[in-house]
Amino acid sequence: MIITMRLLLVEDDPELSQNLFQKLQKEGFAVDVTDNGIDAEFMGDEILYDLVILDLGLPQRSGLEVLKNWRNKNNAIPVIILTARDAWHERVDGFKAGADDYLGKPFHYEELQLRIRALLRRHHKNLGDTITSKSLSLDEETQRVTIISKGDDMNADQDAIELTGTEFRLLRYFMLNPNKILSKSRLIEHVYDQNFDKDSNLIEVYVRHLRKIIGKEKIVTKRGQGYLFTDV
Image (tube, rainbow, N blue to C red; front, side):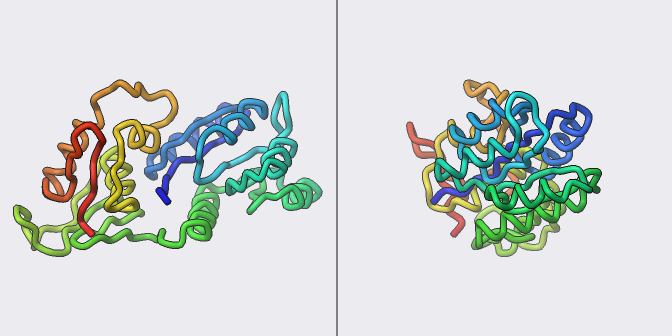
């Protein structure tokens, strides 16, 4: 199974939504955003997300109704619901409808961050603070990669290398999907949000950047198909 790191944020408060969007992107997630229940339900059914952050007080269709509809269609997407801190009945209703976790408003982002990581670990057993392959160690917190064994053209003693947000998301996706041919469209879908131009050649540019950092032999081009991460 191909593992993705794409989140859906459903929140109708523009300030909170923008704030969360920026912080989640900085952490290396591809984040899609919507502010109403109808679009949220459609997106959750049509796109394979790793996790949804779902506000219950939404226009057009409540978050609770969206969640119930997903579960009635056997959509098991992991969901963290956002509720008013004193609305205990909403939390109960949310869990009954199939929520995996909840967070009361207002909240500190650090708490949401921990709940996201815990929920992702429950659903993807091979996720942790550090992702490793044969010769690489990728730190989720610092978004740095370390060469842990000598490659053909790498310095075995070099320190951890800081990655840009896109480099980090792309390398993480490669490392979570070793020895699988990943098409350009699949990489774009899970490294960028829904507003990204899918005809852009930026994937090729960032693959070249990564090859310079980790060694060109670790990412193989499969002509007409995509790329293969081989550091297994």
